[in-house]
Image (cartoon, rainbow, N blue to C red):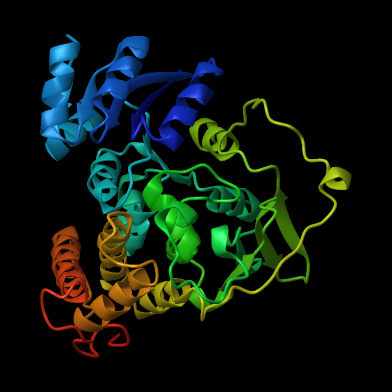
Length: 393
């Protein structure tokens, strides 16, 4: 029996992971966490009889008033849950850079990691992969594209020429003018049902840029050998080109229970109640190059990845602040890319030697992004700051 902690259990990935657990005889939940959704978490805790943690202290206090089980609070509480749970595997489905801390804790404890929190590798980079290697912990990706690549590259060490990540194109595929895009339009993803932040990231295509950086660290492939193509049917999740001219592709109907099940059961496979792909019914599989003029965030992410050091950390932090501002009506949709670009220019990339360097870069980038948003709202003079950072390394 594999003992499992799910971080972010009330979100889309966490809820589907609990469905996978419910259909499995080999998985046992031993801990759950959420950000603020204490009602949903308490309901899950009652179902599974396990300790829980809430990142928001007020939410944790509310949960304690509604349930007599163990409730931990704050970032420290989530870390304590990981350490004291006795877990064999931690599914990190937290949203944003807040997921890096629990990733560090799990790997430090030598616990295997099912990673849905791409920011752990975008921000943590080689420090995270080095930690996993030092503690002999496995990182199995949960994102559908990286799960596909993980399955395709197994047994092909030394034979991989290129990796190809596919993107649905989001709700604005084919549009060149994104001026005036509304919050509701940006949240209407054509394929996947996801949380608000991830859905906006898909709409700007920065989500695919973050996945590109994640793939670089997961598989050790240089950026110049990782491609992104738009595939609106979302049937082909990834492609691997091999040195003999052949290519391997991972196909299936879009259903996150499939990569979740793979990550939780790996190296074994378990039955998942999804339809087997019918190619005749699908009829057409189409591919196209992404429009980097209309969706500059994808270009910015690749540039930050190639710059290395703290540049991806700055990119991610600026994007999180900008997306929150867009969802709150404080900047337009196109302002997200503007804030990210200007923050990368203003905050120079450095080479981190410790995780604390990343946390410092994250904080600096958030402060700069917030200043830029204030200027855009007229509270201080607008304008580009410096030309440092993005190409400094």
